[in-house]
Length: 441
Image 1 (tube, rainbow, N blue to C red):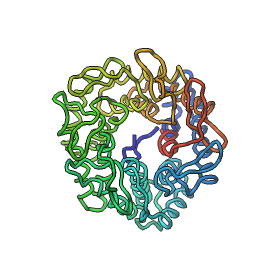
Image 2: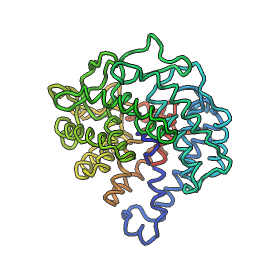
Image 3: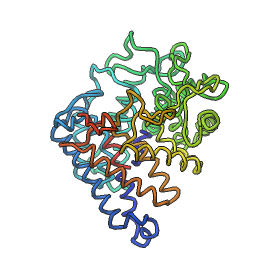
Image 4: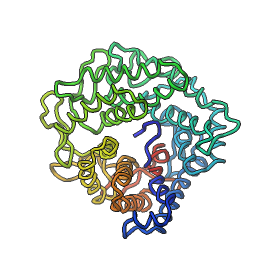
């Protein structure tokens, strides 16, 4: 999902098409998506971004996130202009030099992390640390076309300061970090010792890049140790559970799956290998992926099983699983990716969105999991499958997704969570990842 802001969910999907000649586009597009419509869709998604971004800047900034229905704001993570940080690389992708440069300048002058706030290590890493590092790389390199002449590593310095404030979370017997840390005081003495596999194993990209930029190996070392700590406690089936005690190393929830609480553990293994070339990540990924395909894959769906016995415990599609076909494309396993994407997209077509949970036994929305919080995962998989196959049905899917968001999620100052996918009831909240990922793909 986060992958150093490297996911490319709706905007870059259609922006990609506009970069090629009309001759290429005519051969690549579906009968239903003409070259002209592809450009219109690109412009439509650009307008969607600015509708929400301007809404945030006018009504919520410098609070973390926008309340798009009431046109207000809220601090949801740490109180440091989260949505602006998370949007930086989308501004760069859009070629908005003025807004990008102004945003980088404001953050460099005003942001500071010496605050008495307890924050999620996982969310702070993927949204804030990743956002700062991505924008630093863009602002400091002429090759991006967005280099800022006056930029002097302010974002990199902030990123290093933030990461050092997160380091106390890794001081555990297992090497697996606590889930939360106070940016001023470190880990609270009453902090829970239980963390998710995704929370402990989805930090390698951002911390690894920071080590390379600062030439300080500590950041990459602690996150690699966390991955090793999780993998060392896998079952004999090479499956990992959902939650673990970071002190004892005992699994407190043994449900193995590719969705909630585990998803990005798999994602970061492969992407860390692709980014850094470290074959240890590849070896772990190959072992973990083979086990997932053997024990979790019920073609074309994925189920949750007990990590020790492989007994099915939860026949459920949850929306966080939707990243998986895109990951399979990166791994070169295209055929199952196509079949699974078709199944996942059928749920979107049925409701206009993917609910957080869809019960595969009853073929209905899971009770208590009826919402769609503007997630990008299915869009990212659609993008990667189009890149891999050039099958025009994925362009049609992208168009359907844009239509759903415009028709049912758009609200006065941005885009709203959908609290019930069957009735398309709106909720007054917009996660920062909507601008960072969903409209970017």
